[in-house]
Length: 330
Image 1 (cartoon, one colour):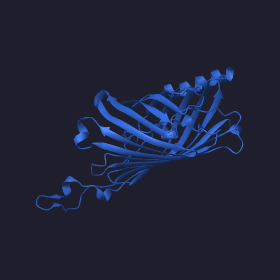
Image 2 (tube, one colour):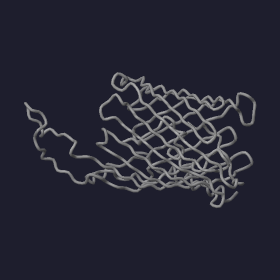
Image 3 (tube, helix red, strand yellow):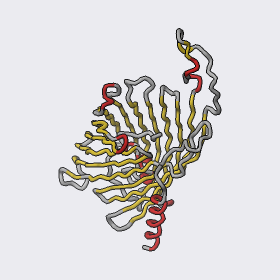
Image 4 (cartoon, rainbow, N blue to C red):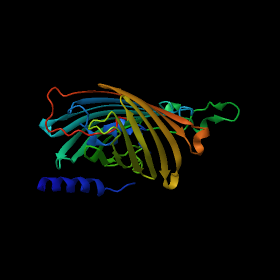
């Protein structure tokens, strides 16, 4: 009990002693990218603590020139001999048809704590190395314009580096029972500098995420064939604040869902309605989601698309101390 109180104290002190001050990529199917959503979800696969690989692809506002393309690949697995789970995450984000590109590689660990017979907690920490690059030759400046012929002149602008690298850290807490789960995560803990010119104000601001949900069986079974899962995710980064609220419906191998995304504060608006359809069979899963823009931006950017795929496998020797997280896969 003394160790438990010590862990709780340091975890919350680590998270909440930090001040909140570019927006990170996000996924509509945030539970299909578990370790990206919360480092504490490392090692929470569904098959006796076995391994899990997840692939995610998001095409945001493809109707616009220079769209935003985000892809990620992750691996995580639970190991009894280290008391928790490990994870590896690769992320690639491209804006302006690759004009601006961000790439990161992350490795994490989550410690599993059995609070009592029904309630389990996980505490996650993740280290990351990121690199941001820009193609200066594809940029256009005012001094290149000829009044008759357009962009034909050489620019007098001077460029420094075309890439910048930085270290980063994230942390998270997760608590769950057989039917309930909730967590808090903080990304970009040290707010690394991402400037190509050494501007000290060009930081990656901290991203705060809170998420929670329930799994409600509809057929009265301990391992239900049909269930409904209401969920909510709240995210804050710099001046950007949003909430996703909706539900998943499972019927055998099929999963559907409907969500609504609302932003608040200076950039507040009703943002998007999101629909999901997915399929899970044995070790494999596949999901597709469609974001329908409902804000004033819908005429220029009416929709976004997202695909997730994944595979899980059981541990060769069951992890006796493993506590399963009953959570949506999409």
